[in-house]
Amino acid sequence: MSDRACISGCVRTGEHYAACADYGRADGECTGCVPLEARDGAMVCSRCYGRLRRHLEDTPALIEHIRSSIGQAAAKRYGHERTTGSRQPRTAPMDVSAVDASRDIMAAIYAPSTTADASPAAWRAHAQDGIARILADYDAIANDADAFPQWWAIVMPHEIPGHDDYWTISRALNRWPLADRRRRANKPCPDCELLDVHIIPPRQARAPTWYACNQCTWEANEHDHDGLWAALFEGTDQ
Ligand SMILES: [Zn+2]
Ligand SMILES: [Zn+2]
Ligand SMILES: [Zn+2]
Image (tube, rainbow, N blue to C red; front, side, top):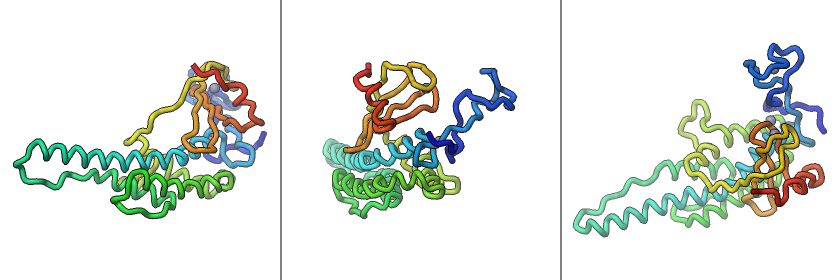
């Protein structure tokens, strides 16, 4: 176990230093002040490592979903025109935000450019090319005190101060949610011992399954600790 603290400033929920005014009480203002240790080989904790990585892994499916929403808007528009026959065809309002979001995200992940009329599946394939390169470097990014916060900043917040129009991946996932594939495990969290761990299957081939506690900061994937967590949680979902 590394003794470095997560550079994102994460703390262990409910754990306090003896010097903390809320040491020994559960109803204080401080929700925790003991830093969360960084993951082995990374500058950040497993939770930060996993959350950013999963957002990146979700990106190709997200891009396809966003581009499909544009297609559906167009289909509805044509249907409407057929039923109201005599009316002059109008230029239907394009979902500008979907166009903007797909453009911002593709640029952020250095995906090869594609044409506006390409199919959602083609967009997804291009996004996959961009993401594959980032994921190949992901462990290096997570161990880089400059690169990790930079990636975090364009992926994880819903807004970038001063760039309100910018579509971060989180903002787009919020606007065009993907199906939630998490399942609840029926074994307790190894850290807080509460029964609130979720099994999060990967959306990418060869990406790991994650196990994440909703009650504390504990998070690990199927490869961590030589597969210990996979052995513990496998087949325990309800
Ligand atoms: Zn405290
Ligand atoms: Zn962290
Ligand atoms: Zn927990």
